[in-house]
Structure formats: structure tokens, C-alpha cells
Length: 359
Image (cartoon, rainbow, N blue to C red; front, side, top):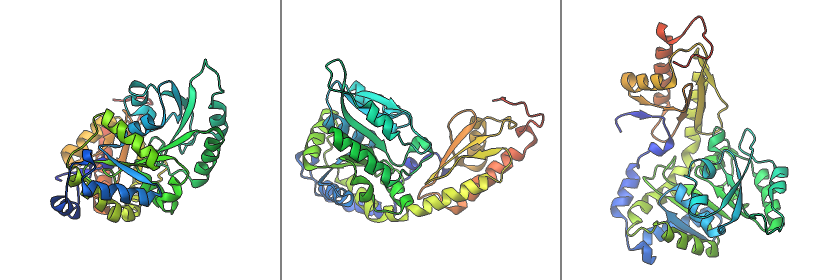
């Protein structure tokens, strides 16, 4: 690519090894179940996560949707955290297409719903009420600074779910970042959930796709749900081949992205006018002090135009920067240099500190 891009780890593009694998991939019709490369990817993903079967899908949102459709019916209720992707960023798919009612609970600073509140949210057997069917979790918690939720929380949720016969689904878009942060194999997390979706196209660098994993019976139902939402793909082995490389090669190097995020956070903390939020994995959230008169969009525009660096403005005063395979230490240092230069210009700071000025 011809730019340095910190907007997300979704901007990654395939590695040379992935491109070779895609070019040479053996393919068939996956709707008939005859694409050998897709079948290999699905089996590899399931084995990696300790599940019976896997299903290749077009995206993480589609993976979450077909999982919910496979596990619950219309009028059923899903207990979900207020910061979770499935609730906030998937166009209301569970309700629109599944008739599934979200029961939204508050989360703590790393994305955990209170265990007591989960218990209290489970409905009694009453014809007036929705039926509690699902508990939805996320790891890493993208809405909580990319925090990795520890194993003991998953074990406790599993215990509650078993007591009440509930299905636990994990949005594991960045599951392998969570596993890297916790220092455990990914299957140590997924042992506590009935189903999981993880993305191949974020920090793992594949061009497209996610995989849903669960029991053979669950994946059979998810396969039908994938067809329902138009997710059947034909000679999908071309992109599945990149997913195999992602699982075999890219999951073991995510600690480098975490180190670069820490490097970026440390540098940002040294720049006047910037406040950095806690850094857990590969996401760095930071905000502008009140005396900085430039807003986030203006700074992002200057970074693009003057330094060819792209960064996400989350609001008028806030940014998110995400590290990934194509962002190295040099790129981190260039971003820090660019920000320092922009914020050191006289027009960037109101020395009278007009608190609340958003420009």
C-alpha cells in the first residue's frame, strides 16, 4: 500500500505467502461442500479452537448473525453487554432478521457484564416474557480499549449458562489477540463457549472471511442460516487459502503488534495536549486536551495530507490507532513525529485554555 494506515487492523492486505497460496488453491463448489480448501480451513479452525466443526463465512458480522440464528428463535432473548459489537455495530441483525430480543447489561472497564446481573437478567418461565436463550460475550472487548477478558470470567459465565440451559456465543473477532495477551492457547478461552466466531481479515491479514466454530449439530444449523442470509460462496477456496496461512503463521506474531501499540502509547504520553487511555492489546485510544484548538478531523486530515498517515477520528476530540502486520516501529515513530509537529504549531493550542472548544 502507498500509505501508513492506523485506522484499523481491517486495512491489512494479504502477505506474499497468502497470495501464493491463493493463486495455487484447489477449489470446488463450497455450496455443495466440495471445495477442499474451504473444508481444510474449517477443519483447521475447529481443531485449533477445540470444537467439532467449523463454517467459513464472509465476515465477522455474518458469523455472529448465523450463530445467533442457529441458537435462538423469534421472541428469544440474548443477554449482551452494552459495549458489545453484536449489539452496537451489526445493524440490529439479531432483531431484524432473527426476532431475537437483546437484554442489554452494563459492562465494566474491560467489557465484563456483572455475574450477578447476568443471573438476575435470566427470565423466569412466564408466558408474558421473552425466553432467555443466549449469553453473548466478546474477546477482545473492542468497545473497551481492546481489553482481553480473563479465563476465570468465562468459566463463571459457563457455570451460570449450564445452570439455566443457555447457549454462550463468543464474538472472537480478535480472539487470537486475546489469547496472546493472556498467554494461553485460544482453545483455553473457547472451551467455555458453545460457539465462537473469529475474523481472518483483521490482524491475521487474510483479505476476507471469518470462521464460526461449534458442535457438529450447531454448525449444521449455522450452515442453513448462512444460506438463508445469502452467504453461500462457490469457489471460495481462493480466499480460504489465505485463511489457512493466517491460522498457521499469523497468530504467532501478534505480540509484535501489541508491542508496537505499547510503543505508540508511550510516545503519545510524551506529547503535550494528548491523553492516552489504557492499552491492552493492539488498540490505542487517545484524546485531545481542552487547550488543543484543532479538532480530531482536522488533525487526521493534516496527517493524511502532510505525512501520508491515516488514523481514525472517533469523535471531535478522540482517536483510535490500531497496530497490525503492516505497521512497524518506523511507522509508529512517523505517526508520533507527525502528531508532535502538528500539535507544536502555534495555531494548534489555545494558551488561554478555552475549555470545551471543539473547533
